[in-house]
Figure 1: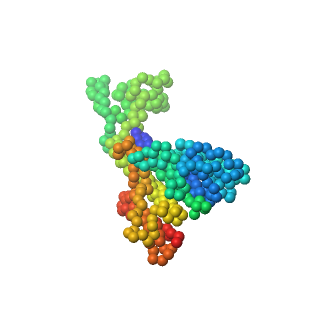
Figure 2: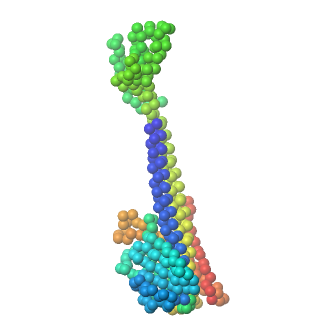
Length: 161
Length: 220
């Protein structure tokens, strides 16, 4: 009887540990999939943009007119295309995506983001958006429970192609 | 069958000694050799009462219906079930070992398959990024130059950055595994140049490591 309890207890412990690990892997996969979707949205927004700007601080309201002049790098990216305005903002721990179409605002939050860094040289506040080399770029890292996933988006707007 | 239980020695009233294992049921009062008890057991009129008192004794009740203080009377019947043999212990350990090995193997296999799936998606994502860059970036910002001589060196990196346990290597929190390389192959005809991403899947069990190649044709 004691042996049966021992075996069942140990097997249950193993199963619980395996399930816990599997849950962690599933969470990591789900988080990576979310940011992959964000990268797709960002890529589409940049490529289809008729106007875009990168800002270091919160962008001023354009009120339907052209976007105010921005910077070459920053944590805000605003893309305007024929359907409306898409705004991306990195606030230090997550990326917020806001889509405005015909006055309807939709907002999504993608948690778990961090500034892009190499393993040996952590960056010191490097913004995630820039327009180096004539290409609109976004780089960020997603730290999951299992690993770290770097994301890079390269996009060239229509007017620059 | 050998039993794992201590041996108990009782001193009989006649001056003799009886030795029996502790896992055996304790003898009842009338089985200890009392003449009156034996007579009572043989009497048909009192047979039912004797059997009743035996059941009461087996359940740990004394003749007044309350539980006695003698543990051998109270738990004599149950001692048989609480004991376990050496064979049981060995069988339990064997089953435990088999279960641990099986669960661990299944766990590793699931992890490996999950890793392959994620690495495959990342490889496709990276290849798509470089395709965009090579196709739409200004010519001087492109990672490869078509028909360049000598051929440009490939772009390299890692597909998997696992979290290291308690900083295994210095201050780095994440490791670098599954290296990949992206190169360009120049075709003779226009529109036949292509980007090639190659990475090597690590071995697992009997499966040897193998190289995976993904290609995308560049627009002219």
